[in-house]
Length: 437
Image 1 (cartoon, rainbow, N blue to C red):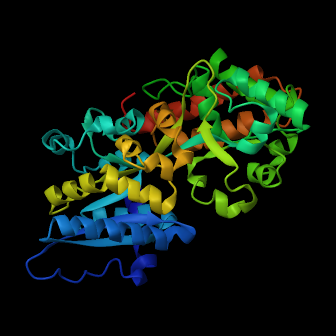
Image 2 (image 1 turned 60 degrees about the horizontal axis):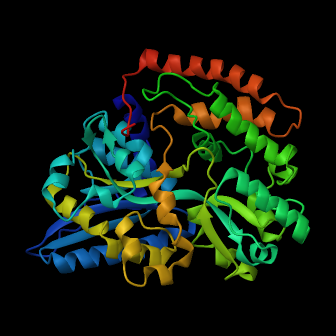
Image 3 (image 1 turned 90 degrees about the vertical axis):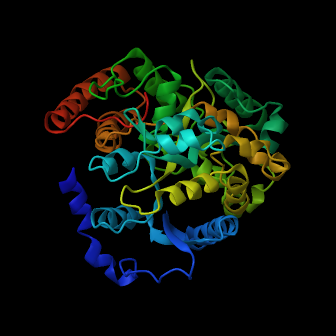
């Protein structure tokens, strides 16, 4: 594992000019300095910096002997390499935000601080205030190494005006989804009322879980897609396009769901909660005419939920202060400020109970339910190549564009090839599984 981390660290020369490897200025006299890192992507860097500077200011007000240095302008694509360089070089930040899937990999060389004692001794911090799936993802084995900061989920965006005209509400089940689509076709003349990504492996997680299936066994050693539950889920999505004909076949050829939505050709769209912050700006004609609901449920009510965690490096010289900063950043009132500034959902469930939150964020009203029913993909290093590579190429690409595809045969053939890849991985790697499963 260290060799892999060193490869990431090799990018240090490319980043030397950014100033992040120069020694920071000393803190004001009488103050202890802690350094916090997070990442930003695209045009969100300035907004992210403003938010975290506000968090730091609030923390410093409560802790006048502390100065927080915020580093929030690192592009997401560079972040892990730069962070790893600092971790391995002994000059790590005191606390950082990172994607949930990297926690176990970083900890393979004991680079992170166990948090169990801090959680146990902090009466104000309660793991029950956060979605169970995100709490579980902070564990490697029985030890907690990170806590939830922000999560994203999949949901059903729907045009409230169009559904009202048709006399229907947002569907709660697979059966209702088909019924609502039929009503929209019959009453409003909509040809394809639903926009989704039939070839998106990311979105297939939810359909599969809702039908009682999964991609891997709990120990992540056995591929389990060749079951009636997984095959049935793939078949259902296939049939939405080719049998029920409620989704445009153009979606199987790469047309984005946003194009259907923006043109008004779809009354419902499956997309992520990360779209909340810019939906009105992107589609001003529909402002005030849409809402977000949990994904329609199959046999079970599951949806994707995962995102960013906060962690403390083992090399941090101020671990106690770092924990206090993390606990402060995840308070309901701070999480509310995140929602106010970005339109994104909070991770702390108590935020939904704050006075005025529901009125200020009506599009998040149904999302507490979705967060509690959330699941995440298995957080093992090979999951990207296995699911977004092999499953996409071996199953979704050949199946979804073809009306006559034999879904069961294709999935079973793919399962054997995917199992070979999993076996190859475990022959040469130590066993670890992140997240309590």
